[in-house]
Image (cartoon, rainbow, N blue to C red):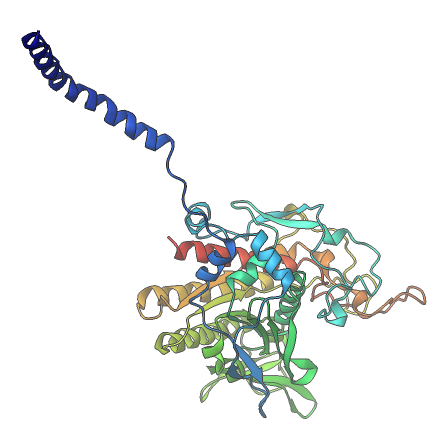
Length: 470
């Protein structure tokens, strides 16, 4: 019996040794299949921690102080505590995952080609909810009777343009300083942005100086963001409306930038350059000791030159100065946006009734760019491309400077309905319709089409961020 048990045991052990490899071969694939179908869940992350880590490497911005020459000086200011409403918004809307965003968003989009389509959603603000609207652009409060101009959205042909997300805009710019540099169109875009951002986070005006408050700075304590405006209608050095007897003209010097903004570049993380209409005025042009000529000054002894070339030269000087100064600086880099020329829509004289009375956008086949508007835009776009070429050839400048054209000329041309017209003044027809009434067919109602400029700018910022994460 004992021998039989030993024999059976030996036989079973022999059989086990033979079958074991086959069992292992069957179990290992099954185990791998199990882990593939049912992976272990990742550890949960608090959304506020994600945001904190995402922006922990950003430096605090500077708070402006007044100086005697009207230039904005800076002193450091620690971040302020977030308000409750912003804490709620941030925690309920976690930031997009970096890997998903970099895969889903292409690095570029052609915003120029598209069409205006009707949009049921209205603007993020109105004439009463935003306190930073310039009086002359508050069309709603001034009695404009039609509201259809508020319900259109620009739809590019090749990409989707999302509705402006003020919370995301502030998150991307957290701890940074955004500056608008240029003329009244730069101010128009700035005030549009302030209104859109104030729908979630009211700003504090911390600096104001110059005629008509041409130099101002706001602080958004919820995200420690500064937004400034610098009056510089030529970008380069210039003397506005010099007088030679009875002739008023501008003097421009293209060998250097306007240091009212140029000297502030070390404290600026993102700058929007926007000029144009001041170059249509009579002017004399200089480049160092060389007289380049003049524009619209037939009564003076100077050579008349086309202003398109000198207009482009202003951007050439400005973009080169930004690249050179930032590439040599050990401080922060800078993102540069050039907002292209925004056409006017005067039909007839500026003080004629109905000078810009349209209430709907043009369809693309109804209107094409005028030659002058096209040349102004072309000059800007060409200089942006030249700047990109310089950056691609300069390894020191490339990591510190990014440049893009905010190409709004065509989509602005298609919106004759978006200007204040006679409603730059309150209730212009309270005493009846008059033949002569002052019109503004250059600037844009707030809210209005110019809000789209900032939607596109945010989209550019999102694409830049996605590209940097790849």
